[in-house]
Length: 188
Image 1 (cartoon, one colour):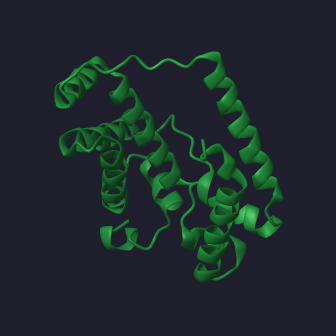
Image 2 (cartoon, rainbow, N blue to C red):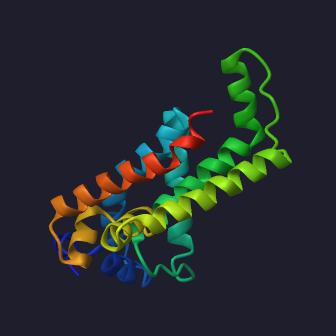
């Protein structure tokens, strides 16, 4: 398939071609996602070099494992999740810890969760699920498509046969309602 025709394919169509080893399709996918994935990594790390390395590692890994990787919902969500896991692994690594100790000028405490913190987290998760269930059905579906499935506003609009502005409005309203419902967790 000529490279100029690749721009018209959906992310999922591109991924299916990539699994057969199509390098131009992978280049197109890279161009579509690189910047947003870099921003995701950088937002967590505030280190441009590390963010670039992480995004590159994710793309290399996905190319090497393209035959084994099964993407069912959203290619964008898969790549974002892969970057988030890489960021978490990076932050757990000893080299990152040492770097941040130097930046902070002091030793960082070891992060451990006690039983109270685990209980608070379980309470927060239960409250979140409860508040999510209280959302109107259509609003909840749009929110889940966005947050759990990683679909873009345009993808949700197409899937739900509604306008992108309606999706934005639904997401904004859902976030407002969730903040209101979960507010007591953040007041302490």
